[in-house]
Image 1 (tube, one colour):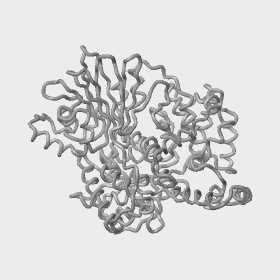
Image 2 (image 1 turned 120 degrees about the vertical axis):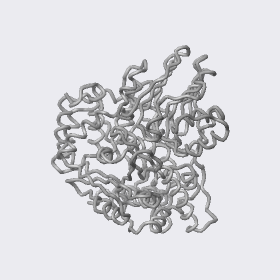
Image 3 (image 1 turned 180 degrees about the vertical axis):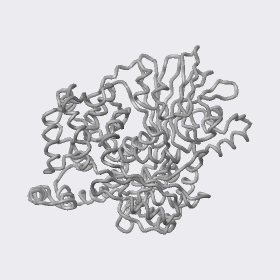
Image 4 (image 1 turned 30 degrees about the vertical axis):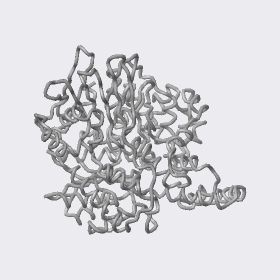
Length: 607
């Protein structure tokens, strides 16, 4: 199992086995804190409690001081060691003392009890399988399968959900019998009786109330919390940098990192030699204003042709976020200079950054104001007009539909409606028992009644953020043996943001109003529209990835095993290649799944 995770920890490995109990812990290590002394797994003084940690505990210096003052003896400067001693004092409640991104396992030999825990937002993954009382767990699915008595049989329902969403939503893995521990959960297993139980240990505030403080004071509080978070995430015994796209989120992080750093920060960005996605100039401008040591990567079409099959084939689960390619490329590029980078993940979900929050709220208001029959007729008329971008969004808003379905079709480009012709026999069962809308509805339970924007922000924090955004950051970084840290997901900052009504986040008519105001205060740069690390996927599918798509159609496992209908996909691919229609929204997840499946089956290359 350890051997499958060398990319996650190329610097060191270790194992502990309690043969009497039949329990083992293994760990690979990317050495960042206490490079020489932080070997894992490690124990308390008498060897009765053992721990293995994936991730970082950012407040470990303060926790270490607290433990030393309480009489504990710590042999290393590692953040992992604080876990075993906190457990001695607090038991399972140690999670409430932790600020960080983590998945950890803790074995209590005296009680014959295992504790597993995952960080509040799910920055670090943790898969598990329970078969007849035998519990196996790991940071990646392929690692778990290397040691678990589980048949690598794909779950058709999970494949269906992957195609529609572009990622695996919720706790179900792509393989039957395997689950992922949800964010902010802990799980216990007891040797006597092999009892397995899990529970949530944290929830963000459930409701927001109008603040009594003026907007300027809210900006100041966000700045205080965010600067402290950035400073804590820059603690490292190895070189550190910042991913910079030139947008609000990353520019603000870079500005605060420059403020707390004693030397010029290193910044990294990525651009392309094809398409209209261009952000290197903006990133360069921000870096120059901050006096950063800036590095740019141009991701060429030749590099894309080489990188995509290798990247998709190495993933433990398929992921169809197009920006995964860009993030992996810039991670690999940055690894030549640094071992840790700080990124801007989580800002949109916490501070109301996605424009669709505003669009969907408008749709709800239109639906309440216009009777259904006139609205349906107007939508049919508008749908026949040659509208682009913004006009097409207005058409979508005019068409009466339940809010959950409208949102689902918006964020997935309506892929659920394309499934009937696209699916092969292996996927027709899940299509007949479609549970996608109930899945999204369940994830939105508990939101303030009638507050559409707040409901969608909650949904994104529960599903899109952990299952796509953070999974992308973890896999892109770890496959390059680099750690990506996320200051926006600090607990106090996230709770502060959650207490504010959506109207505060859109002060001035745009999202992330607090972050925009803060950026204007701390950096001599002007903001620009959001881009993040976007990718020209449509151009890639017509150019460097066209041969890969053809190879998949000719002999890929996705078609040989009956997951997708070969001829139907072929027609879409030809249509896309001709330039008459952009079919990238459908073709990209099909390609991502097919290449992943070939890698999973040990037959990369589609033949």
